Amino acid sequence: MITIKTTAISILFFVSLLFTGCDNETKTSARNTSNSEVKPDTLFVIKNVNIIPMTVDNTVIENATVIIDDKKIVGINTTIPDGATIIDGKEKWLIPGLVDMHVHTHADINFKENKPTQGATVFFNTQDVMGLYVANGITTTFNLDARVEHFAQRNEIASGKVMGPRMALAALIDGGEGWGRKANTASDGRQAVRSAKAEGYNFIKVYSFLNADTFKAIVDEANKQGLKVVGHIPDVFRGNLEEVFVPHFDLVAHAEEYSKHSKNKTVEDAQYFAKLAKENNTWLISSLTTMIWIRSQLKSLDEVQNSEYIKYLHPILQDRWLNPSTNHYYKRTSPEFIATIDAYIDFHKKLIKAFNDAGVPIVAGTDSGIPVIIPGFSLHDELGLMVEASMTNEKVLLSATRLPAEWLGIDKETGTVEVGKYADLILLDKNPLEDIKNTRTVNGVFVSGTWVDKKRLDTMLSGLAQYNEKNKENFKWEKRREY
Ligand SMILES: [Zn+2]
Image (cartoon, rainbow, N blue to C red; front, side, top):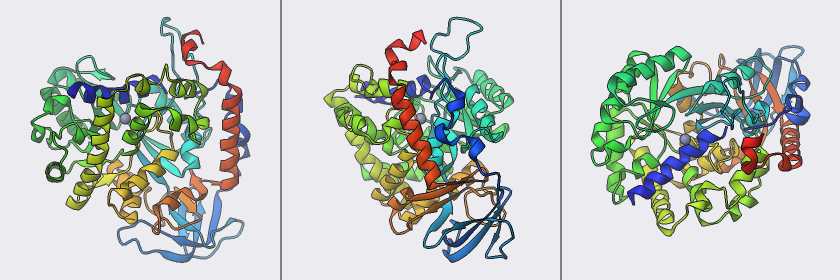
């Protein structure tokens, strides 16, 4: 059983590390909607809109006027300035841009790695990768295995070449023969933290194969260096979970970390874990959709192949994920594996309820980028699953707006609809407080100060799907080392 569990968890990450997005022609970037078409306007007014601000009291402001200038909200219900681009918000709903707190972003990758001067061999067009987040109203992501190429992507966004979300980046440290930076002693763990900080990371991710001393040293050093810690609960704490809750272990990367540590998957276990997390102020990333899709792939690839969103993925990912001979989960399926995941899924509902009841802050994350968690679209699935697991619509919205902004330390800039905040915003056709499914009714998005309306989002997506379809034959997983 333990072997199967470990396999399930390590596969999650294995696949994510291998893939990171793609295309070779920057000029087709964003397909039919290159950034040159972006209106250079910086002054916008949204009229007659219902604002769900997601502030602490969160009183809906009906029929309001929102003024946006130079990327920021500069007025609510104040005088409409001359020369502004007017957006009709009548009978629509304005909420803060959403945050996905657990992503693995596809980026350029080198499949050969045999020459010291070799660059990437498969290229992921950054606009194509980021467009999926934007189209779904996601204006901030938290990358939990960030590498140097993600700094490059972030710079493309910051410089205005690409329209995309804010990117928080965590450097991964693991033990044994694991992933990312390896550290197997306390002093190596501390040095790994200091190196990551020197390279520009603001967050540390701890992983499954760290030993106890190294884990504790990493968490302690990260705090000394002013970096917050997110991550897995290392396997070494199995059977003595209390020990993992050291001060400044700030955030657990997904619900399954607790499932791994629950023998009987009872409500009592869930409540006990919640108590430990609450006492240590360790928040939780939900990541419920991950297991749903893993189970789906273990059973059959039909659902994946019929997914309406798979066409937005780079062809090399489609080829790998849709193919029975190369889909990593499908290849390793067994009745025991399926039973394990079933038990996880069932336990996650108990867990979310227990954590929510105990007042442990829960933030929404999806593990997007692993098979077949589609960036952007998956966050709306996640929000629905959180409601199914007993959270209110409002609390679920909070988990994807103000709370993650607070955890990331950017709540003075984003996370609510308030004067002075950046205009990270989604305009929705329907009220998400009434039904969480309504977060999908995106009418337009403000990202990096740019208004992107529904028509433009749809054009971007359909252009991307066409491009991917046309290039299917050029990107075969089996030939990846030949590219
Ligand atoms: Zn992950």
